Image 1: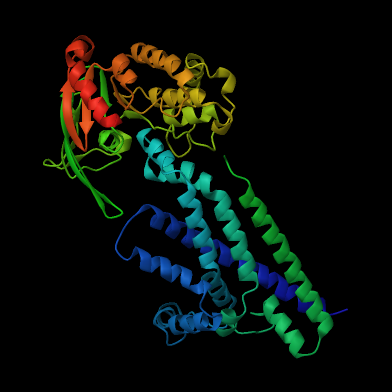
Image 2: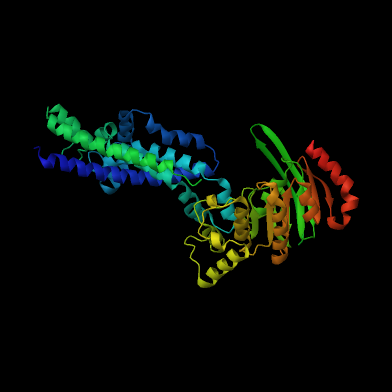
Length: 224
Length: 246
């Protein structure tokens, strides 16, 4: 049997990173999707493109952009280092950032579709009944769109779990520190340890299958 | 109720233009906006409710200025206290009949009702013959029942004015005549001023006290005191109707 540490450590790290990345993507993606679906302003299309771009860009390109941004000499990275003495490079927090960027479009796109499907007149009716904008959002729009948002978040979680390229560039592949499941698979194959690789691959496949099935089921049930 | 509307709005969609330029006033309880679809009736009504922002003009209802572009007044929809019945009723599909009505009574983040408000819900459910349907979802009930829920939801807030956008268009003809008399009863019971949109001459015949005839974004004719002036006004009205129907 393979060393449990070699499996357990990347598994726990992967779940932690994917979970936090999904939460961040959820907050940013849902807010952006709601604002973009309800407000018209200059540069709206550009923001939509920017938020969807990680879906099609190679992960290495995203990783490179992240390095430019948060690397030691990067705009934001320099500020973090100067101000707080922090660096995100080669840390699991960096892996969260990379996974978040990569999975953001999945939340953003599905939330956008879910908000677009909410009957606009329901929101208007709520307003004529005296509800404030925040009440309309929390009691009408969000409950009507939550299935689509949850389905998108599950996809985002699955995507974050499998993230490889951008994470490798930002957080590296340090066993016990930043080595996630997909990194561990790569290492195991490189080392010729196929027993280990088979086991890791199986875990990832089973979890992803369950998530895809679940998000598909969620989208099938509707109000009407 | 005194209602005075004088608004202009330039609408543009898919490269087509539409200019609304409407002005009328009424001192009566039942105003009917009549005209072909696309003549600006709904835009006017949405402006009264605060859902549409006119380019310029004034809207005064019951002595309260709701909108005045010159004075920079534009009261938000949620503070206008105007009931709006949408053409398809716009019930909240994820809430039961009872919770739809309760929303109107407590449109806050938590929406908790106190005992007094709970009693008012019961009273309204009974008044609108919805007591057996309180736990039903909007998708499970009939068109006529949905209309009653929407009316109860709008009226429980004691609005100053009730706006009805083609309230009978979504219903089958057999139901219509029954619901028309139901609506008259409700209007008398609550003694509330009503503004109704229709392109059905029968609605005009039954409801109109002030008749406002729309044509291509403009108010063509206003007949005050319509129920007594009916016969005299008929030729004008019929000519308009035929031109709409054509």
